[in-house]
Image (cartoon, rainbow, N blue to C red; front, top):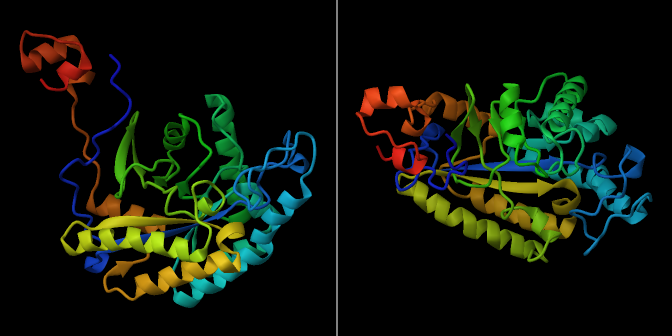
Length: 333
């Protein structure tokens, strides 16, 4: 019997009390994507140049060719953008989670040392920053395993979290099946973490964001100025903070990229928002692993038996002689 695979309900009208540490009213998770050096490039064995998330509007892949300007825009992230952001976050004593492409880490080790010295979480963002939607299970599973191996070699420890981004419909399942990750973030469907059952594995999912995200400087409709980014972050923070004051604390994730928000004009909007958020009492700035550990301790998963997943004989023994095998009926039994 096959149940409809999507979950349109979630926590519904009664989300759990997040019970953030020290009574925090909101958890603000800052995520910095470290992709530069892991993007599409014929130097990396790819068929074409990168075309996604840069300051070149309407960029297209160049099959079989290097794209000098695109490469240069990406290089800004590793050469200048990362360090501007590192100074900001360490100066404000805000820890962040890095979504780190393994090949990008391997090609630029100095930022890795700085991340570790700052106590940041270095999660995996895949082996290469490429599209995964057409990969079959075997290919994607192999890429995931290779990412974990290289990540471990470069950082000295395996990643505790996973986010592909340019994922397939199988990514969350495959990540869960490794049993390696305290959290997975390839979803955008809630303001709180939640558990997902994958076979015998109870996988914690910490949803990410594509809207409170500097990627919208490079996509339409998007931001043109740092002020627009600040106002969107503020307008997102304010209602979530108010919900926390009413006893319904939530999580607010902000997605960042070294080559985008690291540019001074964009950067100014981020700094303005962080100053604003830090001006409020009860704001927690956790790494995603901190959220995962808190959630696992405070809201451990409890599996429940679903009628639609019970065989005929067991169903009749539990619920009587009427056996309806349609999942949308059996779920109501």
